[in-house]
Length: 143
Image 1 (cartoon, one colour):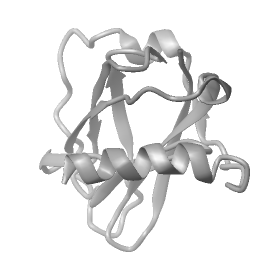
Image 2 (cartoon, one colour):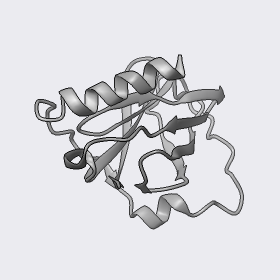
Image 3 (cartoon, one colour):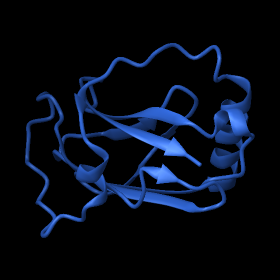
């Protein structure tokens, strides 16, 4: 399954970069905010299923990601979060839910041609079962 997701991601980078619409931004985070490990991971906030989901913590190992490396992260969100989508102007994937409110991702970044080694706006979208969203954005770059 991961291999398929990586193949789709690589194809999306090459094929669809010029035709993907601009992604609206949510709360914007500085890269240093997402690469610093929290002292203690918070407990996911218990919210009603109909309440808007909330991203509480976003952490990832890199915001300047070298090609050929592993890129991974963890997200703590409210317990009513059904899914976390991670996307840019050129790719999208869904984080794995480990328990209610806890999500993680790990991707191996394939080599890419020079024009795609650039900066992007990463959008992390938490959705509840009704599709209500909470968004966080952070600048990232592939080198």
